Image (cartoon, rainbow over all chains, first blue to last red; front, top):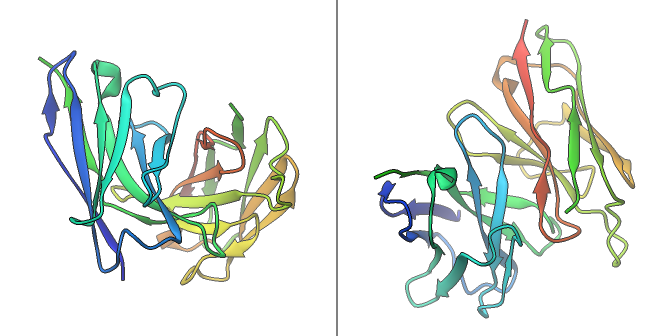
Length: 122
Length: 112
């Protein structure tokens, strides 16, 4: 079955760019039946949707982060990535990648990565 | 943004007893295509979220039938018919009808 795995630096300095990659295994990211999403969760807090990308490269972003976020896809590597610029301590969180179904389970995030903790600190 | 409000925020439950979580949205979640994209997620301690229910009432593959979802428009409910120890965790409702997708604050289910 499909599995997702986040990777990237666990520590980022303030004002720099956070970069994470999600590797998809057990299935093709080029399947037309899914969007590929990023969600974050500050410690002890709730979930925030960051944005998503389709295999074509079409994206949707949360307006609260839109000016700082870029999500891209590399179908040759079966990966998609998140870049968040000008980070501050408020961006410290566990970052999850997830798959959003366009099939019968539409609107449901049916596969999640284990999450990766990113701390913004000098 | 659509605000999702869950109640209660904490639910101590006796094993084998039912539990119910309410989720209310600030706007109707009925999409222009006629579907309502309201889902429920479970997050066990130290784990990523897991999809339980999609489109209000459809159990995702492998989810026990003690979990059920109901509701319409702006009011939705997740019920656990008989709570088991493995059900401990935080439950979130999520809407995927209108951008940006948003989540409820979470309801912590714990054993009394």
